[in-house]
Image 1 (tube, rainbow, N blue to C red):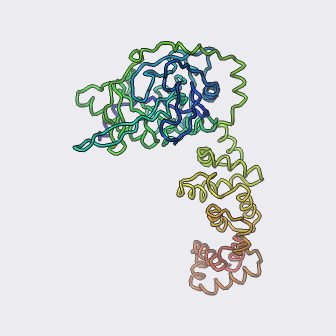
Image 2: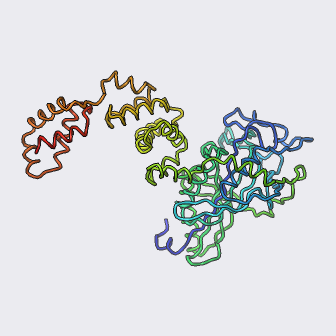
Image 3: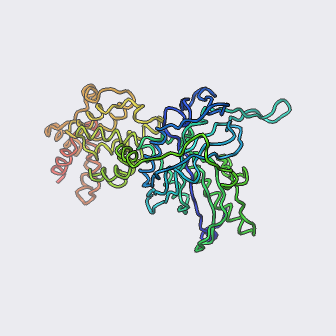
Amino acid sequence: MVSEELKNKYEMVIGLEVHAQLKTRTKIFGLEGCKFGCEPNTETGTVTMGLPGVLPVLNKEAVNMAILCGLAFGSKIPERCKFDRKQYFYPDLPKGYQISQYDEPICVGGSIQISNKTIGITRAHLEEDAGKLVHAGADGLFGSAYSLVDLNRAGTPLLEIVSEPDMRTSDEAREYMEQLRSILRYIGVCDGNLEEGSMRCDANISIRPRGQKEFGTRTEIKNVNSFKALQRAIDYEYERQIAIVEEGGKVVQETRLWDDNSGTTNSMRGKEDAHDYRYFPEPDLMPLKISKEWIEEIRKKMPELPAQRIERYKSLGLSQYDADVITAQMELAYFLDKVTDEGVNPKTATNFLMGEVNAFLKEEKINIEESKLSVENFVKLMKLLESGKISNNIAKGLVVEILKTGKDAEKLVEEKGLSVISDEGAILEIVKRVIEANPDNVAAYKSGRDKLFGFFVGQVMKETKGRANPQTVNELLKKELS
């Protein structure tokens, strides 16, 4: 750990390279599928494996998705882009090179807005994913460690989104990633599942004395796969570099791996520059020409972006916080839209979705689509609440039961006898009984202890098992206690 004094001395500079797998049905240059979780090496084929005599054919839907991303980021979509061969050897890259884009990418520029600043985007380019190594075994007298190659992921279309080095804290880096993920999910091009590797991040980090314009030597942290890990890795690397410089050493440009168990980064290899990859134009793919008409056709398909959705929710009466939270959870946001289309008050619905519903979903580790709560049943529950037939507390209990069982809201209220008691005579009788049973508290209340009013309300609600109309209870209690 380095001191706060040293942290104040050095500024951190962060740029992120995010690899997002595009949700196409087939690979970017071949006809194999892209499903996650299949048996190893069952979703690969001749093109991906680079067998003799085969040629890549570009997946048009991958291009459409890349253009859609560029429009969402505010990028320029050039009239021409091309593909290049990026040369490097790795066991899960069967051809010995990766088809990517170098000097003429499909998206140039753009930005993403986070809470306190705008983060620039340098470029976004299409490329093919590599396969995956599965490490097994252990060193020892009776066996040795080994790795197996799974090529299912190889050839999956990737969009690599490269940010400008505009972030200065791990909090900013996390928020940028969260905003980027949200955009990709809402426009339907990537599921954003970090655990499954469909969205991965490489973080480039350097330090410099505060006030200095020149960048320091950067290191790259490879393939961080969670928001929490991203923050921890960045913060660790920041302190590691400060310690090196303060001890008189120099930061080495290299690629490092994050070890989540130890909370440290470890050297993987020297960091390559572009010339190390010996890029040259892909000879088997013609340069791609993108017309203005093509771009406008894609623009027409642009769905509502997260920032637009937040503003719409605010216009419906939600607070900035509520709008941010509900938008960040796409499935809940879509559920809310369907509910409000049926005439339910947006604020009432949001309170339940962000409260009891979200708590249940987190505990069960599922999304709302996997629960037993249907839009129709939730609307019934909300309308029972809004009409005054059930209380807020009863509705909170019922929504959890419905999430678990899927039982009809109206039938549950009827079976359990949970409808609100609005009869003034019945409630007045209970109010008088509560007052008579608590003479000391009555005296204290009348002597100025106004907070005891809540005690009396609680006692009446307890007597009625939460079914008494709260407004009627308050009115009758005030009258009787005066």
